[in-house]
Every structure is written in structure tokens, then in C-alpha cells.
Length: 542
Image (cartoon, rainbow, N blue to C red; front, side, top):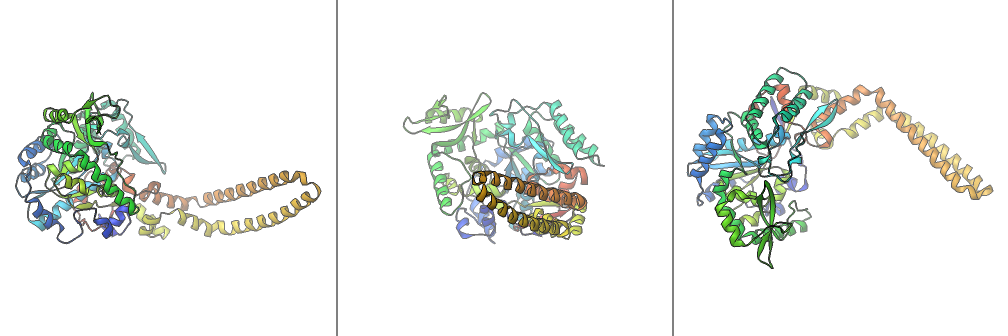
């Protein structure tokens, strides 16, 4: 393996502006993560705050042991107890088979920044991955894409009972999911590593009771030896540690919502579209009942909290008492989840993807309402895996890798075909078409003089012949494509590998394709590479 760094834009306008350190953008954040002294300043700021280190460490030990965490992870949790220890944190939903590769690149980013800053700051800095087990949009995590016959196939695991349940409460049918796993791994083809992968997946599945368990088992295995610490946002024991923070968010819910809406207005003035959908009445907390969760809204006139359908109502006093007695009945939404992370952990930096950076810009003042600072928001490292046979094909096509990742290959493919074959044919066809139009114009003129009532018929005749010309043109293009099919497949093969569906590779493909091709230790080997947080995209040559 080796690395090449490229400067590539991100998938949205806001995060690209953030990477370029635009002043108008960075005022929405407390820290500029690219400034020299940012992390030293952040370390000093955290010295004045207190955290439930002992209670949280005890919980993390128990949680990570469930998934056979190794000694390095357990040692990192013990280091977390120290008064000066810090964390680098980021999170994601519990996707099946870990979801798209960007989940893996986010965790790698967390680990590498923690390593880097521990050396710089000379205090313990541990990597923490926050599993968003309270999310309920199962349709976002229930599938992966696989390359199949030079196309993209979506393989979905359907679960009828999903509803509004948190993914951590979704039981798994082990027979059904085993069939799904076999279908996915078999689609990659048999290699020297396939048998070991299937055995590992079967072991992880058998020791799992729900989607979060299965996800945590796989992440623990893939990142063994890195010291990564997992935390599940929906864990009932964690909820008990969050009680007082839920109560603070409840008391300050109107201010939190107001500040987010104000920030959205400012972003709109700058030409950006807000990422968060938030109503002025939203309390930004979910209430759980009968295995489902409902967002709470504040009715100012009646001074009560209600669910959307108003079937459940509480006074503020009742809610405060209910949180005290049953914190497991509550969870955060996308606005208050970052606030909860910051309340729990001494966060040196938050690692976010392009979308997260965009919506965190709406939260700075919400942090201030809670009397805490927004931590430095560091963009995750972007990864693209370049397989040897794809690199060879790019050389054969005489194309540039950076240009491919920026602009795709569709226009290049068309230009090649035009130069080789279609240019001469299309120019001849266009010449004949011009002669036809001239002739038909004369023909139509005669008709208008002699039979003016048939003008619509002449126009219909012209349109029919036009369609035939277009049909012949498409036929010629298809024939030229087939004549040069081998070359066209090379263009398509590169596109499918590097920019499937015109999207970055890490948003479509799953890490298990690469594990099946290059070995179970691919992730650990990448973690050992010198990956720097410098805003540049990393090309990993496999």
C-alpha cells in the first residue's frame, strides 16, 4: 500500500468553503481546526470543566467488553479516567456490514487525529466512536451496494417490524440475515480470504441480538489493535449518566431552538441552504413509548409538551420528574445529540463528514445556551481505494486520476468515440440532413401554394422523417460503441470503481469488497499509514 494526496472538492458547497477557510463560514464555529494553536487552546479551555469520568469509564469498560474489546481499548478507557485526558470523537448510524466506506474512513480519521494530537499535546487523547443507536430510519442502513456484472446492485435486508423503533431495539432474524450476508459476500466472488470473512461474520452474528450489536462486533474486529472505544447513544446505562443534561436541555429548549433558527437565517443570507429541519415548537428531545419514539413539541399557550399527534401531553414539571425517574424514555435528536456528546466527553475535536460540518454550523449558539463551547470540527479524511488493475486501465486510457475524480469519464468516453468513429459518420449524416431540410422546405412550399389545407400533414411528415434521422444517429452511436466495446468497457470499469453513480467511491461501496480482495487486515494496515489531517483526499493504492 502507498498513498497519494489530491486536492478535491467535497460533495457540498458549504463544506468546500469550510475547507478553504472562508472567514464568512468560520464565524459559525468556535474554533478554526486548521489554525496552529487551536488544539492547545482547546486543551486549556477544557481544564476548567468537570466530567463524570469515573462513571463513564466504568460504563465504557462494560460496554466494550461485550464485544471482546482488546487490551489496548480497555487501556485507553482506563487512561480516560485521568483528569487531563481528552477524546477525539465522531459517530455514525449502525449500518449493515458497517455501511458505506465513509464510516470506516471516519473512524480512521478519529484514530489518526487522536494519535497525532497526543504527541503534540503530551496528554492522553483517546479515539471514541459514537454509535447512533437511537436513530430510527432503518431504510438508511438496511442495504449495501455491490458491483455485479459491471453494474451496481442494491442488496436490501427487509425488516417488517422496523417502524419508528430505534435501530438498537431492532431484533435480527439470524437465519434471514445470514442468507443476506451470504448473498452479499458471494457477489464478490471466491478469493483466498472469503472463507475467513464468512466465519468472522457468522461468529459476530451469532453473538448479536440486534443491529447495533452486530455493527459493534464488526467494528471491534476491524479496528482491533487501534485502541478505538465504542459508545452506544441508546444504551440504557448511558442514559442514567445523561439525566441532568437532559433536564438542562429541557429547561433551555426554547432558547436552543431559537438560536438554531437564528443561525439558519444568517446562513440563508449568505446563500446556503440550512441542513436541519426544525420547527419553532420543537423541544429537540424524543419521548419513547411502546418501543417507538416521538418528538416532543412545546405548546406555549397551554404550557405543555406534546407529541405531534397531541395524544401524549406533559407539563414541564412532569417531564423533569420523568427524566429523573426514567431517563431511558428519552433520547436526543440531531440538534441535541452534539450537545450531549459535549456534555459527556472532554472533546478535543469532533470529526465530521461534509453533511455534518454543514449542519454543525447551525449549532454554535445552541452550545452557548448550554454554557459549553462547540469543539473544533475537523473534516474527516476522504479515502479512495485504487486497485492495481484499475490504475493500469487508467494508464492505458491515458487519463488523469485527479481529473477523473473531479469530472468523471462520461465526456471523455464520448470524445474518444467521436474522434475514433462517430465524428466522420455524424458529419456525413448532418450534411445529408441539411440537404433533406432544404428539400423538404421546397416540398412544403409547393404544398402551401397548391394544397394549403394540408399544411399540418406536411409538418407531421417532416417530424416523422426527423425522428428517423435521430433513430439512425442513435443506431450509429450504438454500432460504434459495440465496435469499440472493449475500450468502452475500460472507461466504464474505471467509473464503476472510482465514481460509481457519479458519486465518491466511499459513499457507495462497502469495505467488505476490499477485505475479500485484499485481506481481513486491510483496515489495520491503513490505520498504520501516515494519514494527515490536511484537507487533502487520500488515494490508497491497493
